[in-house]
Image (tube, one colour):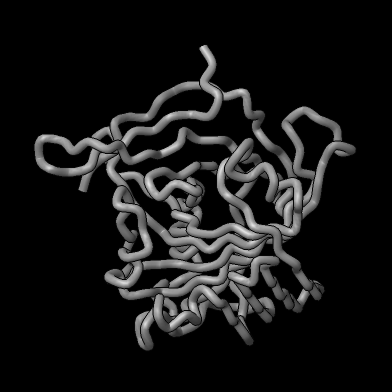
Length: 272
């Protein structure tokens, strides 16, 4: 597997975005690694937990999102869904980790217009139906292009499911905290655009999932029967955060002397 040719310490004209994670549900599945590998760009490999690859859906409501330093009046609120796969890659001779995001959906037309052009990652416009209290979370998402559908019903829980690959909430929390770097699919199969999430604090609680449906994970052609299993769900609430733009990850057209693809990373709107 080829590596990344270095982390470029360059600035962009894109501002750091600041706001509040009002609610974030991570609905997770453990998947046979050979199935997940088929869904990844060649510069990523699945990050395994006890022999399983991890994938899932991030259902996040963002509030007051605005460039850092701007007043609240400039903030926007949106519901968002991101299908994610935990991955590793080689960079500067080191193993790094994060998530690959094959699809993003949003209730915000502004985010959909800017995604992949001004802001990293292609975003699809979707309709969200949410019914939420302190002890009940019901969410439906249907994309306007009819390519993606998600439905989740969950309640707070006192412990992790017995069927999870994680023996404790602490281990699950640590694993997903390391997935703060996310690379989203673009319109080019040879490049991904990145964001890194910084939170004021990292605190999750387990959820008991009563219903989960996903056009992505329920697709038998993508995930043959027995290759994907619900693992666990985690909840975050009311957390200040920032999104930092990362250099783009690109596969070049050349191979190195070992016959492996080399990869480069570059930034949007490079400045001196």
